[in-house]
Amino acid sequence: MEGVINIYKEADWTSSDVVNKLKGVLHQRRIGHGGTLDPDAQGVLPVLTGNATRLFDYMTAFKKTYVARVRFGAITDTQDASGTILEERAVKIDNQDILNALPSFTGNIKQIPPMYSAIHINGQRLYDLARKGVSVELEPREVFVEKIEMVSPLENGECSLRITCSKGTYIRTICHDLGLLLGCGAYMKTLLREKCAGLSVENAYKITDIEKMMSENDTSFLIATEDAVSFMPQVNIDNCVLKKIENGNPVNIKFADKIIEGNVRIYCNNIFFGIGIKKEDQYCIKCMLGGNK
Image 1 (cartoon, rainbow, N blue to C red):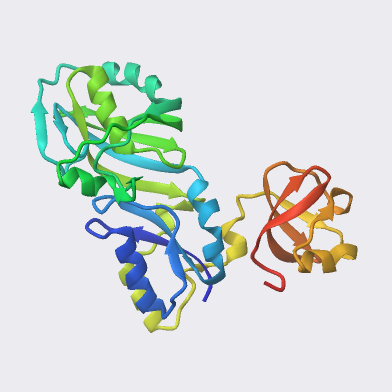
Image 2 (image 1 turned 120 degrees about the vertical axis):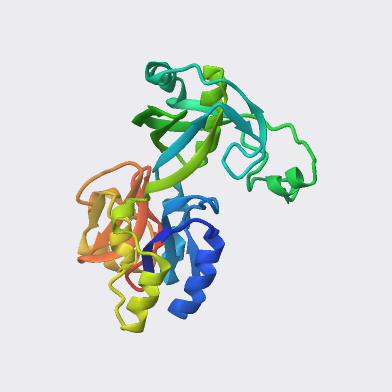
């Protein structure tokens, strides 16, 4: 079995829990996920099986969309609801104050990752160091936020934000920093990942759904590897160089029906071969996914 599964990760499951459970349900050893979600978060978790595990870097690099519920008036040590409240402040803001502040968190922005995160420092996870009371001075990291909007108004000190962003963006840090900018403090109360790597929460399956479908020999939940990268443009290579493509060798761009920069899907003789990229006057296959594999 190989392809991509759009899993709806529920709260209290780690991303690794999902993968380990599916190994047993699918009787599949070669399996992984394309983008970690915190245990308390819910929503889209791409799961890659078989040959599709080669897509890991491409799936994690794709932009993601989240809806975060922000609680104003307090600061926690984890920047979310799972942490200990360090400070409480009065909430003297309105909807317009929030709307005026949001542009500060769009475009290329710099974030200091939270101490309670999975980043490695000298071979140790930050959250392990934080639990031991070890403080580490972290350098700001640049991330890209394409769009941020308020999707529910401020009510009882809370509102919801929809954020579309790049890999590596900490949504809880945006909530925390927004609270600091507004002067009242804030933390992320809940988080839902709506979209990831072209997958949408509306079409996601819960683990229980997959278990039921497998018991009925129904694998319609599986997205073919070729379809999983349909967000990339397609380039067709002339049949006269089929042998070169089959062996994963570069081919001159004169044999392609179009010239496109960046990652593309390579086809030859109506067969999908994998992900390629133009380098000077050649198309090179970066990741062989189809053809003769």
